[in-house]
Length: 423
Image 1 (cartoon, helix red, strand yellow):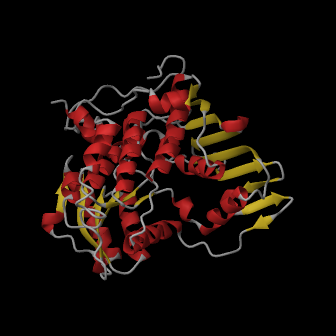
Image 2 (cartoon, one colour; image 1 turned 180 degrees about the horizontal axis):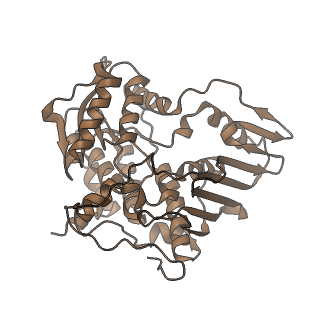
Image 3 (cartoon, helix red, strand yellow; image 1 turned 135 degrees about the horizontal axis):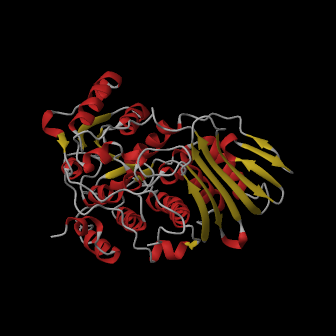
């Protein structure tokens, strides 16, 4: 059977129907959090640097967190992560040798362990499959942004998020600005009309190249699959390109402030200095929301250039620099309150929701913000404008490889606007 079709090719209706059939016997989830116990048992899927940092933040966010299972595609990643965890949060590490899983099916073995929640921090390509497996197993979920790399995967994440809602499972995404007191208060004031009616916005993630932060692997004798999975930030099929992997943070803030997703977009981009993989090093996209509100979006990964990581919302009575917690206009405001570490706060909020039995679910919102970024990439790659409804409902773009094994892969070419098709 085609391995590609097995992962998340099931229709949304059939998936929800099949998963919902088990709800009556579940109560809340397949392993409901034990009332009266302070211990939350956690598993990690994706043992790279970000996953390790997220798990450390999780442990530090609340007493009583135990790490009981870990899985990764590569054994060396898992061992490096485990060593770091034992150094940083030794008392929390309860991962025996029989709970350390390696390979393409590691995620399935982790979610079958006796645990309450799982962190999904593998590269974005695997988000939809790992999320579906975790929810089917009845686990609460933290999943890193973005929510995927293509429209097929995004549709799967939205369907899975609905099943998580039915099962009363908490789902928190790695869009940690949503858990910032500064951002929350500034957005609240925007929603209360403090800058008037929103007429425009700007979003930026302009910074340096990520080489040095992320490792680039020389191919040597590695198969295409291993080489590209190890060098995942520089390939579109594994990362979604940096507009998806990184700029999704800023686009999520725009959706949050406007309480909507865009209706259409037109983008451009390219690679002036980048020579790794097949992703671009800059994008500029114009998104159009309801009532003709246009959002200018920029993201860049080029060393020696001006950095700007920010979100500005413009209204009829002023504007808000959300990243700074500042409003300028008729009702000026500057946030002066506490703003705890957002990475720790998002984990604290998730664990609190589990302990209280009051689930929160950010699955759909991170999927929609990710689709903003995917639309921008598709438009820039093809040179064509496109609409949200087409991308969400009709696009057949599916970046999964023919199968998951240590195989050679088709050539990963760089997109050429005017030649690369919309799929």
